Image (cartoon, rainbow, N blue to C red; front, side, top):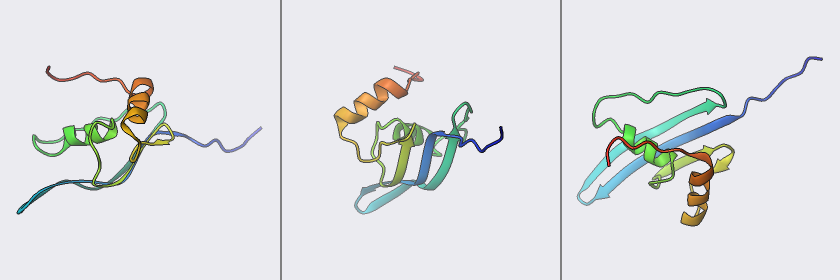
Length: 101
């Protein structure tokens, strides 16, 4: 039997931006990032120092708040979750290996 199977994304990022404002300065760290990672696939985030890699990972993990856009982890939009809800999602869905401590 044939049929279409829908591939679920483990990560979906839609029009993600992160801006830090400290008047009179405004630093645009990430601008309008959109991508998805299907279940079972891997993603490498690479770039020069200062290009926003750590900021992106912090946003994906719910450790930092987005300026605009959406982060969906395994079907759950974490963008506007309360801290206790974020902690629950992190505990069930995310593993961390920190570069230094």
